[in-house]
Length: 144
Image (cartoon, rainbow, N blue to C red; front, side):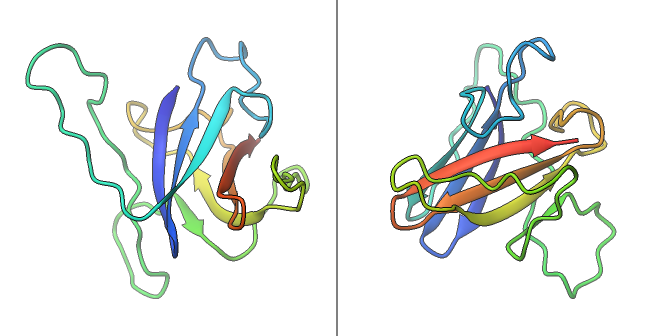
């Protein structure tokens, strides 16, 4: 699985992962299919140290950085935290696997322009991250 992002929340962090096997070989658009995952962690996470030796596949770590909406930037904006999702195909808000309640929208992610660091959401798609605060659950899906 490819690591996509750590997303800050008031109570911790949501970490998002996406299947990057042969395109079309895993149902990575489905929040409950098992081909992508989102995990909710309480508190703050620290960055891991990149090994000094051996092969690492993290040539580019991420293009995602939090940026205030009201401040101009020359960097591309690759999504947003909070508000409401802008669905491409229609509302697919997942239910929490623990309590079966409707999950809260966390973030919307877009593909980046740098192939080595961008997610594959089917050429122009968007990723959607959700969480259930009471249960500590998170989910991720994408549409195009």
